[in-house]
Image 1 (tube, rainbow, N blue to C red):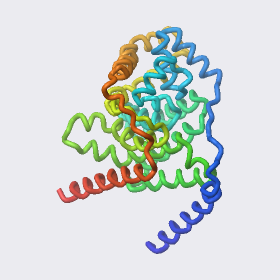
Image 2: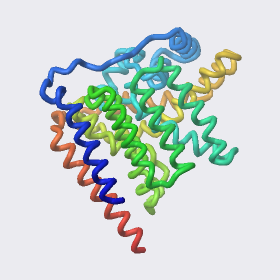
Image 3: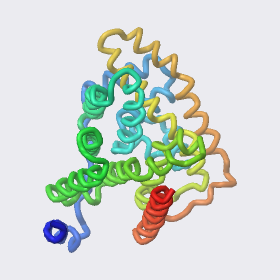
Image 4: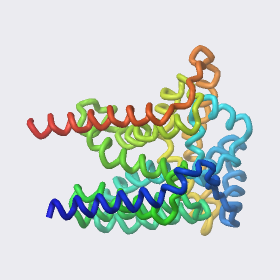
Length: 327
C-alpha cells in the first residue's frame, strides 16, 4: 500500500514537472491579472462613500473588494511605505483572515456542522462582491474544501486536500504558480493548517488570541518579500498593529453590503458604529509612515532565502509537535 502511494506521488510529480517545463524554459510568461468591475462593486463603493469620510471609505472598499485603486493616493503611498499594501490585494489571505473568526462566531449559535452553511454563503458572497476574481475563487474553493475536510474527514486529510487542490489548479493552468493571488492563498491556508494550532498551544495569551492573524502573516511573509521588496523595517510592527482589524473590517463591509439591499439606513448605521475601527487603521498607518528612523529599505528576497525561511518554520513546527507528543 505504501509502495503504491509512493508510485502515485512520483507519477504526479513527473506529470506536473512536464506540465511546468514549457514555462520553466520560457521565463517570459505572460502576466496574470484580472480585476473586473461590476455594478455590484460600484453600488458598494457608493454606499461606503455616502456614509464615511473619503479615506475610511476608500480603505473599506480596498479591503472588501481587494482593489488598490479604491485607496486615496495619500493612504496608498502610506501603506506602500509601511509594507501593508498587500492588505488591499485580491488574494486568499483576506478569506483566510475572515473565515476562521466568522466560524468561531457562528459556532456560538449553531453546531459546527450547521455553522459551515452560513460560512460558505459568506465566503462565496465575498467572492461575488469582488467580481469573482480568479485569486478569490481559488481561495474560496480551498477554504470550502478544507473546512469540509475538518468536519467530515480526519485532520491529517487537510493538507492532502490543500495539496490536491493546488496540484489540480496548477495542472490546469501552469501559470498560476507565478500568480501572487494563488501564492498568498496557498501559503495562508498552510499557515492556518500548521502554524495556527502551534500558536494556539502557546502559553502566551497574546499568541493564542492573534493565532489566525499571525499564522497568515508568518506564512505569507516570504511571498510578500519576493514580490514587493523594499520592506520597511517598521512593517512587521505596522502589520501586527493593523492586521487584527482586517477580519472585522471585512465582516463590517460584508454585513453592510447585505443590509444595503434592504435598508440603507441600517447599512450606514453599522458603518458609523464601527467607524472608530477604520479610523484606528488609518491613524496607525499615518503614524508609522512618519517614523523615519526605521525607514531602512531591504531588497527583495531571493527564492533561496524564502526556502530557508520555510525550512526554519517547518523545523519549528515539527519540533513543537514532538515536544507536545512526548508531554
